[in-house]
Every structure is written in structure tokens, then in C-alpha cells.
Amino acid sequence: MKQVKFMLSEKEMPTSWYNILPDLPKPLPPLLHPGTKEPTILPPPLFPSAMRDQEFSKERYIEIPEEVQDIYKIWRPTPLHRAYRLEKALDTPAKIFYKYEGVSPAGSHKLNTAIAQAYYAKQDGIKRFATETGAGQWGSALSLGTAFFGLECKVYMVKVSYQQKPYRRIMMETWGAKCVASPSEDTAIGRKILAEDPHSPGSLGIAISEAIEDAFGRDDTYYSIGSVINCVLLHQTVIGQEAKKQMEMAGFYPDIIVGCVGGGSNFAGMFLPFVKDKLEGKKPKLRIINVEPEACPSLTQGPYAWDYGDIAGMAPIAKMNTLGHTFIPDKIHAGGLRYHGMAPIICHLHQLGFVEAKAVPQTTTFEAGIQFARTEGIISAPETSHAIRVAIDEALACKKSGESKTILLAHSGHGHFDLAAYDDYLTGKIKDHKVSAAKIKEALAQLPQVEYAGA
Image 1 (cartoon, helix red, strand yellow):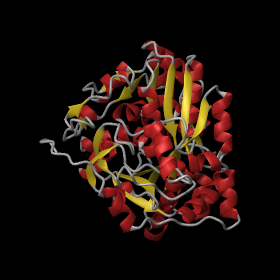
Image 2 (image 1 turned 120 degrees about the horizontal axis):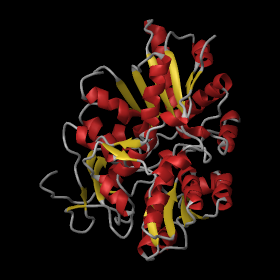
Image 3 (image 1 turned 60 degrees about the vertical axis):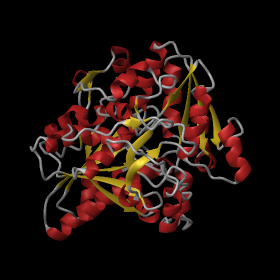
């Protein structure tokens, strides 16, 4: 009998997060202060003290607090599946595995860091979080995380996703959060943008600015971010550590690892424990493919440059692949992939040649999502379908070449609240949005002028 699911016991769940910083062959560039443009830490008034320590920690393994581990056990370890039915449909010699994070109560990987951040804020005596969310996965996760620890939560949700995904808002409110469409009338930056463009669809850069302004304005509030920064990627490495053990159970090691990237946390959480093997020379031929939308192609079209993390220039400046902090993507359904930049760790590894990047159009991602649903039974988030598209393409390449490669897919979450998007696809309303070079050039003209000597 074919084994299709590989499960770990609670006792086998990781008790530490893996920190890649000590293993990098070249140090990661620092964060720069948005005012002085000199090296800085995460802003003390905004982040939990433990996360500030973790951001540039030299410790290879950082212990997961017991209270966080106990909550993780509600849904972790998550399953690893062998996609036999998809393999058969593709008639490919490739072996396809996927690590499924959609079993979390919030429906995605985001809860792995939301629980940690809420725990650390509670330890600091903070009462409230302000945050942004794109498609709503992060806002949902933090809403539940704050509910577990008795904290308040205010979520600024990118307007186009707020309108497309009402059930995400309802989920957040069910868990006790307050969710508003961004740009909003609740902040000065939101009011400014609405005055300039009353029909602004919003962007993650705008929503981040609103959440940061909110947090700076109150002594009882921390800002929370669901991706991009080092410590958030760190919290997600439970995924990859579990996946390594499960692939050993299955008797295979991946030749190719595929995942979608917006800010980068879900996929980095999967591949960082594996890229350690590549950095050490154990698996030099391992391919790691970061998949992004053609509508927001930061890794494939954005320069590696210093840029702000938000539209108002309030967040620290990071060295990353960026389309420019003022860049506002088209209204694609994968709201979680509409960030102008990318996690500095992923960009750094991309520059060093350890990971790859591909951009794919919206229509073919839904085509892949439909095929996955009809073979494996899971309706995937539009973000995840980007990775499914490339996993299928790689499996079809194996069919053409006759090679039997092992493909590991980072399946970041389900699409149960994205059925309107699937309806648009099934009724022929989905369009592709390929960003113009002129639009990118216009946004890149607003990059900060940085003369940091270590650049």
C-alpha cells in the first residue's frame, strides 16, 4: 500500500528555531535608520525585546518558549503528503511531496510567528498590537494569537483584499480584532493618500505605514509584522525542520524545493533548514525556486538596493530586491504576494547564487490550483497556487527529460476564503497583469539615497 502522508509525533516537533545568520558565507547587510541612514536595530518602541535580540542573533538555534510550543501542538507537527494522484495526472516520473500548513486554525503558516510575537509582547507587558495584512492570512493569524494571550489587535487590511475577501475580515473580528480597509481615515498617512486618490486599492507598503503610525502613537501598542524581517523567518523554520525529518521517513531528499514568496516567510521557513546543507556543500545541486507573481516581480525585476519597508519611509531601510516603496501592484487575487520588496535573507541568498526566482502570470496559477484541487483535494490559496504552478512545470520537465527528480512543495495555506477568486477564474474573468518597465522605473526613482560605507 502506498504511503501518502508522513506524520511526526508531538515529541518530534522542533523545540528550537533554526537561525541561518551564523551559517551565511557572507554577513547579511544591516538595517539602516530611516533618518540617519546608519546601522540600527528594530525600533525599540515598536517590537518585543526578544524579537529585537533575535533579529541579528549569532545563536544557531534559539529555544522556542514552552508556552509557545504548547500552543503549536494544537496543529503541529503538520503533515507531509506524497502527491501520487497529481503525479499520475501529469504522467511524470517525478516524485512530488508537499508540506501542508493549511491545517493550522488560521489556515496558513502565519500562525507560527503570530503565536511567538503575541507571547513576547505579553512578556513585555504590552496590551495591544497594530499590524497590516494583504490577503488577510496574517491578520487572521495575529488575531488568533492575540486572543490566546488576551491582547487587543488592530488590523489595516489592503483595501483591494478587504473588498475581495470579506470572510477574512469576519474571521479576524470573530477572534476579537478590529479590521479596517487601508488606506483608512484612521491615520494621517491614510487620510493623505485618500485625499490624493480616493479610489486607491491600497498596498502592503501603505498598510505598513498606517500600522507603524498607529503603534508609534500609543504607549501600550507594539507593531507586528508577518514576514520579511529575520526574526519572523526564524519563527517559520519549524516548517523546514519538520519537513527534513518527514522526507527522511519517506526515504527521499528533495532535488527541487518550490514555494511562493511575497515577503518570503513561508518559503524561507521551509527552505532555510535545507539550504544549510547546500551552504555546507552537502547538497550542492539542490535547487530552491522562489515563485512570485508577474504583477509584483521584486526578485526577478527589482534591483538589489537599499529601500524603505513602507510607503511613508517610517520603517528601517533594508538591502533587498525592490520595486520601490511607492510601487502599487495591480489588483491580483494573491494579495499576500503584493509587497514591493523581499525578505533580506532571501535576497542575500539570491545574490550569492544559492536560490533561484521565477515570476508567473495569474491565469496559469489558477489553472494549476484547479488541477491540484481535482487531484489532491485541497483548494489552495492563490498565493500557494503560484508555487504549485512551478512544481507542476518542473514535474512536466521531468516527463520530457525522463528524469525522476524529487520535488518538495511548500504549501502555505488553504483557499477556503478565496472562492470568489476561483469563481472569477472558472467564469473567465481572471486577467493577467504584467507590470510595465515604466511603472517600475517611476517607483525606483524614489529610492532613498544611501551612502553607507558597508553597502
